[in-house]
Length: 401
Image 1: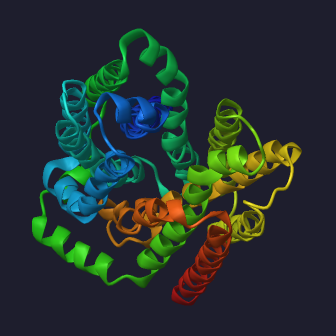
Image 2: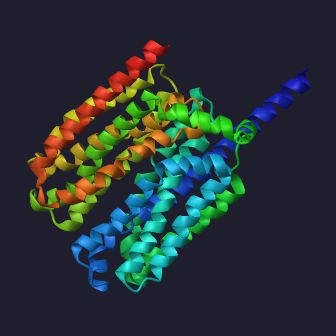
Image 3: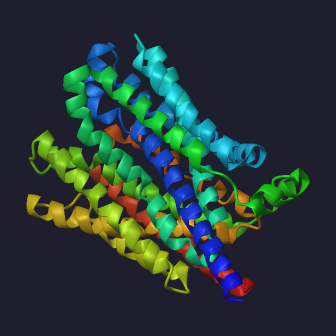
């Protein structure tokens, strides 16, 4: 009996190690894609001058990436069901790798834009694939911590490239940043290929395409999934708007030079990273996970009301750190709750990509002429909508149970 027990413990331990290895491979893939997404802003002025672009074309260097990601959100769920987590993930990383190489070789804005669009395919795929892979390997009661780690993929990727862009630019020109992105994606590709697979139960489920199609239909008609997506997207609209225009506000309204304004803005990324980890641990220990998001949204909604009314340089650091720390709880909770709203965990990432924060990017670009005060009202309304949606989602879940 003791031998059987010991063997069972060993199998369980090996399974847990495998789950975390798969999770970190997916996490590295996400960082590689986020890093490549964020490589344009630090060298935007250099790109405009080197490739003789106007600011509108320069803006499309970010939008092309985002539009491709949005367009492939729902198709990504079918790609995952058809190819499985390993091949689908490799396709996502491979697109980012290929797009970065095309961009590095670009001699004009058209080729660079094509490369950015191909890179963006990876965004649309990985946003669905990674949380689904994690949900397949971790049971619901243990998903909080790995989803907390996963939720930091964008700030970690952004932080890496923002700090490496200047030395890479100085040493190799803007093309060096694109080659660095390609090398990082290549490393993520190799690690993902060597590590990721589906657990046996998921592999068996993938052999039943009819059931997969029926499960997808139930997802599309599931209000809880779309309410969660509304929460995620409206809050992301508010927070990413502040992240986009914060440095400009610090510079133009509070008198900081551009270098210091960018540094203060980057503190937000540093605060989000530990926040997602703390949020994951909290979610593993509480029963009412909806309440965690509701509280975070309420606090963030109050803080966002003053995002462009700080009035003093001394307020920037505590405000940015506090807002960003609270903000980290929202994506962590959303990614953790998403599989629980699904009749089939293979579609776990679908509602989050359908209305992800990139939907707001077109409005953010149009906001160049709007000024800061107009955005305050938008942020407040977005946070309010997110809070209402979350309350409705929690009430529906309670009534169902």
